[in-house]
Length: 216
Image (cartoon, rainbow, N blue to C red; front, side, top):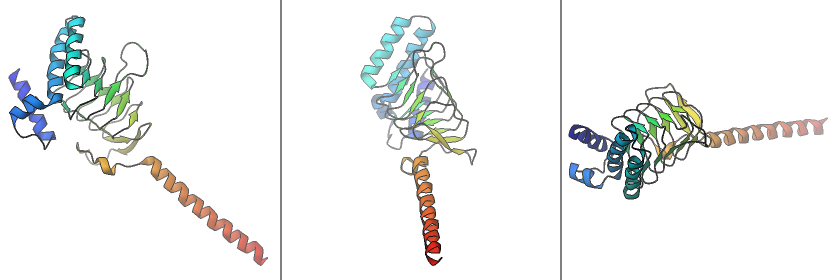
């Protein structure tokens, strides 16, 4: 148990340059507290002690601002940065070395039964305020940009941005786990830019046609 707890804290030092000491991380990092509480709640959940599991998860939510359903399956070295407003649904499956930021929702899309929440594969990163909804899969090494709304499967080694989420990078050099929030590609802005260029081209052609008619 203590080895696993130390592993959780080691991830914080790898991912957060603000972390200084193990004591600080142990006492003040809400993401760590939420993960530890979830492990206890999940143990009760697997034994079908659902009420106790939910009580533990709700207490954790009250103290950390992070809501993880006790039924969610979470792998090793999971890191929640800041964490306020994070919601993880009952049938979520999260792999190893996954990082998510504050305001992320891994939720459902309605009242469907069965598997209704996302599966997040190893080494994925879900950025600030992103919403990943429904029984979909985020592939290994993929990144979801801040504020994106993803409702379809994302292949491995991809970067997804926008509403709805669009894949903007795929199968390039191995995807880095850090995310440059200020310089994310903007497919909407790129499309508007292309349209403006097309309009300018059409205007030039119309002007040439008008000059030709005048000379005739």
